[in-house]
Image (cartoon, rainbow over all chains, first blue to last red):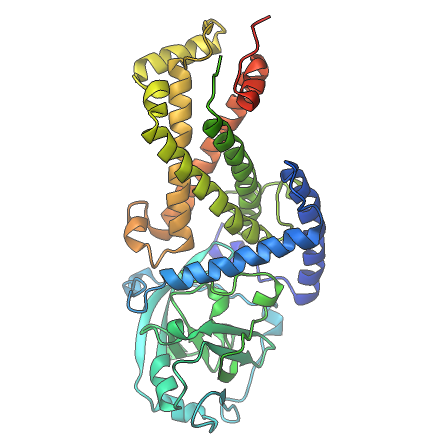
Length: 249
Length: 198
């Protein structure tokens, strides 16, 4: 099977919420079956509560395991995966497009300079490149080349409070996610403007995505419209449905 | 007679539960991006969808890990492993396994593991250790990069994880079959004592 055939886009939100209800019911029956040994965890609420608590515990463990200096492996360009898979919570026919000239990057929350950025201004910042492996929560992986601005550089330029806990992202395809500040400041975390040496195409998040080779793919927001720094847990599109928040690699 | 110490019985049943949860949720995770040309029937999986299965998997892994560490520490420090698993001879294991398949293996004293049992139980322990190590690489391919390189990096670890799972499932099938053939070994793993042979 080719890569393209194997990769299915994430299910749409309506289907996902239906599946989540099914999951709760199935979690009840199988969970109760598995926990027959006298435990009281028989109703789905307490089983789900336990699973959520474990997910929170795993956030803490991952944050402890995360090294702010250890780099994700980089690969020679000969190992780049072509075609690079498209993946989103919607299909290719719903890819959002924006006029790059009209697009602005909003900056908010705990930052000194809340001025919006144009694409041209971002392009004038120092540019870096990486050839790294993107790992999807589904299990597959693919190697790609991204170029753009080191995210720590951007956060410093806007005077972000680097002691804040979270950086959140709102995207114009109605996606959202958030990351820990340690990962935001990792040297390979990159505001990407290019993919494979070309302007970022719509399918990979034009005009701006955040590339984080130390996190799973769904933590790499595409089509970014707003970046905000906060101490209040912002959650995210998939995170709110049960995917682990930290999801570090 | 006391066949299985309490610590071993607790570890056995906690491990059985942990393996059940890990395998059933693991099958649902596998289904999200199958390595081979098949998927597991959804009714045999745990979690309902990928996020639910991942939650079960990453919760039950702590049960498997903590119980496994306690069991290994007990087995080594108490001399349990030395008494039950040693001496170990691959040739004797093969001979006993072939005899067992031909229903010729005599096993009158259940307190002494025959060579085929020693191989199977040591093999199961080794498979679970490998499952944990390859699972750690899949969970943390960047932070545990050096460990991952021992098993072909992230993509190699997916196959190691899958085949060790298949090995454990085969072990469980054989193990449950043997218990069905010698049913008093089942109650022995609960009470610790062996009922007299009928």
